[in-house]
Length: 205
Image 1 (cartoon, rainbow, N blue to C red):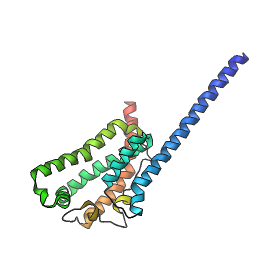
Image 2 (cartoon, helix red, strand yellow):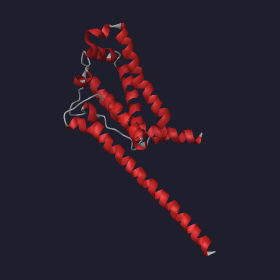
Image 3 (spheres, rainbow, N blue to C red):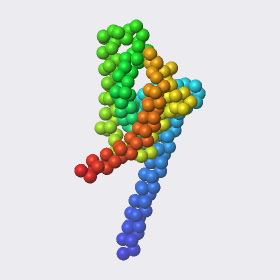
Image 4 (cartoon, helix red, strand yellow):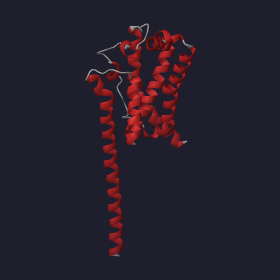
């Protein structure tokens, strides 16, 4: 009888130890994800390097895959959805936004049918295909805390216009940038919550 009690106690202690180890691993993983987020997204603007939100997301996603960090992959997925929805919503709001970007980056070559096709394919892959792949693979990893404040990237209230980053030609109006800024904040706030709810609903179905 004593041996049985010792065996039960040993099993309980082993289970508790495993649970504690998992909790510690999850905390460490979350810390790595936040630290990575700081270095890839928040730190560059502080040292004077300003780049497109999409570039930060791509870099973050690549490193998250290399580290195999579940927390970081959840954040990358949330960022990808935000970029996808935000970009195509802005293109509905401003039908000439994509043409303005082509003009800014390609100059006189923007009128080339070949380069135009390549740019549109790249836009589709970057802003639609990759986010959808992340959703299909890592939606369960998104947490409510998987939020990124895009004003660290595009400047927010300090630099409310980002034509110097995105190279829109002609530059977009202040109204455009105000709408973009507010939409990014709302998406980064609510997308993780919607992802968590969608995953819970899918599990119940």
